[in-house]
Length: 492
Picture 1 (cartoon, rainbow, N blue to C red):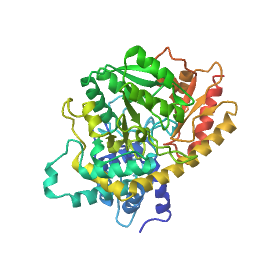
Picture 2: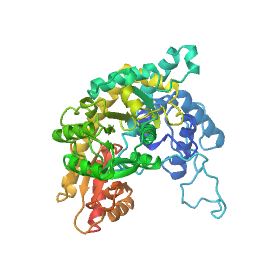
Picture 3: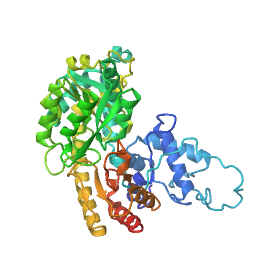
């Protein structure tokens, strides 16, 4: 029988054991990740000697994995001596079996090399104010597992040998329907390409643009570096365009285009990253007008458009000019990056015009099973149920974050519309973002420096931090802000 209180205590194990998703080699089986997480927790002292682990069923439910994964991990660790198990008693950490890292364990020669786990578990900082990461504690593991089971049961035998160049028809149909109702995009199944994510879509696009004769790409400054670096590596020169409180400066964009001959632009209309503005209606119209007049292509990065808290998300820019706009998105911010699934929306005529998928080397599409699972996940309503719950969590967390900053740093501005998973914190005069980030790191707070996202050093920039709250536990909001405030005050 489980000991009294074990099931309740198991609720904390979701954060105590970080299963991660990737290592340096690639995907790691859940069983191995759980084994490594328990080893790490024992070695670090987070699970002390003599502590009882939850029953396998309780831990499986808490972590969102199968009971088999837990029982296999427990069995392996018992065999290795990390855990002990007796009939009628809980699985425990043996007394004195492992000393916390850095402690002087009797009989252990500190000068001798000690064995290390062969598959280290990636740990995010405890006070995680890093931007761009969704709430990893609420990844819908069970619902995705159900989608995979439904997918593998429904696939005809013949389709296990086929991977469609543009994506499985079921996935393309589900994504088109989702984009039409959630982003009000003009979307038909034939206009959708299933990708490994936004970076994969971007790689295909820039290869096609190069083949079509493009040599430059207009990019927002500041902006997320990942996609523009993909463009640069393919031979497109990023041309910086300034951003203000109304989004990308369209007058600056047209001037940069005239100066360089650029006829393609990468933009974030719904929620500019990192400054947090939405593209103003007049500018939406102006940039579409420019694209039509200049025979240009707009790449709309729709990275976190599902998360708007003061109103319904604005429609995708793609709806204004589907013949000019490529809409790219993924599950990375909506669910988690580890799923490795995304899409690009563009009609066949636009695909042919930018040579998407026609002039580039053959690109591997996501597996048929993953694509059909995505179709099941969307068609069942599980994606939108997950997003509704996430919006509620992020709205409450953002409110708590704003209140904490108002208490701790009332004279500093926290800017950005009520959307997404980040805000921008202005720093006091004389404090640099690099110094503030380093001081915060010393207090176990992860935060990002606004200057990291600049395209050109010539672009005017202010000293500010980009503060994320997607992966910050609700119970740690006040402490995370207090620690960051302490770091900033230490520099003033």
